[in-house]
Image (cartoon, rainbow over all chains, first blue to last red):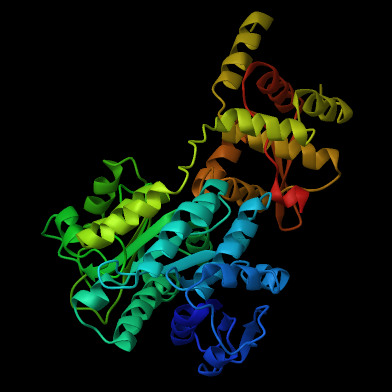
Amino acid sequence: MVIGIGGAGGKLAYQLDPKCTVVNVSETEMKKLGTESKILASVHSVRGQMRGSRKDPGIGKDAFFSIREELLHRVEGELVICSTGGGTGNGITTGLLEALSTRERILPADKTSFALILPYAKLEPAEFIDNTINFLQGPLSEVIDSGNSGNIFLFSNRLKFTSRMSESAYNQAIIDSLRDYYAVPEKGEKLDLLDGHIDYEDFALFNAKPYFNHFTMFTFDPAEDYEKQLQKNLNPYLLPPENPIEALFLLEIPSNGDLTAFYDILEFYAEQNVTPVYGVVENPRLKQPRITVSMLYSRKPMELVEDFNQVSQKHTQAKVRKSLEQHVPLPKLEVNLKKEAQKEAREKGANEEDIIKVLQRLGKI
Amino acid sequence: MNRDVETNLFQEQVNGLQEAHFLVLYWVAVAEDRGLSYNITNCFDDLKARAVTRTKQTATSIIETLQYLRFIDVRDEGNRKNMYITPHGARALESLVREHNFSPQKSFYLEA
């Protein structure tokens, strides 16, 4: 199930799945969508619930506390869609991410994925940019450090403005690409398997990792270099990826096609020390091979903010930098995973002596 | 074969074990201690959840290694293959705990 938060998030979620849940502070906004599942967050305002958050994430964040428990329960294992520019999507999702960050541990099956729509700095209001920068540096950074989120998809509004697309066409393009990506395990199950395997469980585990996800799909020419094809066909709606930490791909081959091309793809990722989860299937409806590939990468939101700035004009950049200077940089957290694991194990009581006692109780030593 | 040679072989076998083998031995011992059966599928789920492996083949090879070293017994019970730690396996786990720096991790199956 999909959960759309705020105006933009609600619209996208509804387009992706009409049975989605929408969350908003404005009844008027929610009534525009036909979905049955709605959560109205309360705003303490004498003007009632008819107005939105007016680009102020503070209003959205306050409203989050009125639906905290219900929302935390609903998002378990689901995809949340919101924009980072406005007040409601940003504010409520900020509350949600902060709550997730403070949880002790979330099982992979319960991790929430986030599709975030970032504004186009050059042409969108300055408040949207400031809200986004605060969001990336604050709650998003925290949830990544905590490891308590699933994949995070960073969509950018850039192409909408540079290609002068209508909002509905742009939204539809995002939804189509998301749908295509989420169809991977279904194809793995329904089409004839030639090599490797991606089942629902593998796919869910991949999506439960707390990294940024860049996915794309394109017609694949086995005679051409994979890396060149990938660079040419990156998903134009998502921010470009960094070096991948993990990868997943599904290669669809027409009937009687050459399936050995996938070895080249595996080699490409092996050079980057990545062992992809992959599947090769036969799709008789295709005339040429087609690949759906997803790469997980991890960067501090601070660097993302810099990326974000690159697309803005000089005057907007000056404004953004000014606001960045006002923020305290996050201290670098040095974590020794081994020591942390030992500490945690000790806290749980499973130390050396406990294990020896178990073996003695069993009478085996 | 004299006892020194046996001891050396045992120690070499234990030194060759990796963290995945340690975790399986540990989970098998905890399960037996709690009177629970722990089968190959439970073990595969735990190894997957702990991101040790994504494939059944690797999980099976980890288990088979322990079985061939006679560190665990794999018994057909009903339609399940349940695992039990042997006295050699218990000594191996003891040695891994005392001399290697592996940290026990929770089994989702046993803690559920």
